[in-house]
Length: 290
Ligand code: SAM
Image (cartoon, rainbow, N blue to C red; front, side, top):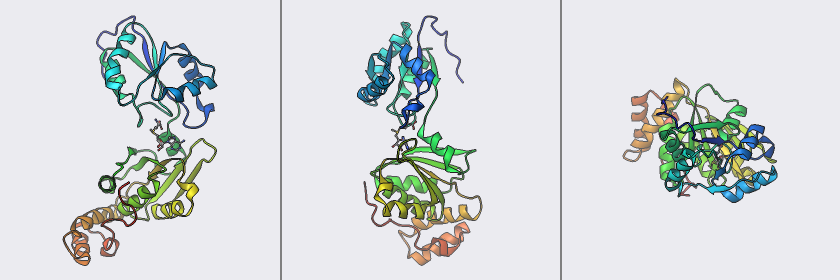
């Protein structure tokens, strides 16, 4: 919590406004009122936002704010806010700042003592969590995994013993490789959910083991289309966690030792079963760098 340095009395408000992730009916009445009332709307892709506004008959000036100009623009936008203009910040879909631009502007506005106020609404991560049926009291949002296979596998491996439910954003280009790598890192039996095209015509929420889900995505090209949230149940606290740790150690050892020796040593070190480790590490076939 940070107390504002004397908030300039006449300054405007920066409204951070969530927009639909697929269904226009999800733009809240308060979001519409706010977007109508501000001096300008900062948008990631102005053409996209103009279409959304057009649907609701809202006409306001738009300012393009994306990751490449956000630093440079933040200062000018803060000056406008200090001058008394209220602004809105939106992204192409969902909640700004959630795997979307806006963090630098919000930080700069708060540092200048400007009031930053949320107009909450859709976000794919919360929508997915709300229908997945996985433990939801504690969860970890990992956003997008690295595009390169090596870095992606490393990140997944580092998360393998995480006990909280894991959420990832993924695109149609990499969903196949991501599920293959996740099955490798977490084990093919780990329960998971694939939430696709939420709130849209082809909304699908599939549950099963990571191995099953990968097989279903491979078998049906339609299941590889659209936008995805991948949810993975956290590692159990006992044997599941030992197996996960054992696989991590095995993956490191097998680069230097024969697989049977690597499995025996990893099992001794971690308490995992040797048969759960043997053959579990190394590179996964057919999932090269994206
Ligand atoms: N700010 C957005 C939010 O609050 O959810 C996320 C923006 S991020 C650039 C886009 C990613 O969000 C997509 O690649 C996908 O992983 C996820 N996503 C967005 N809309 C979705 C939907 N309707 N169904 C499933 N996933 C979605």
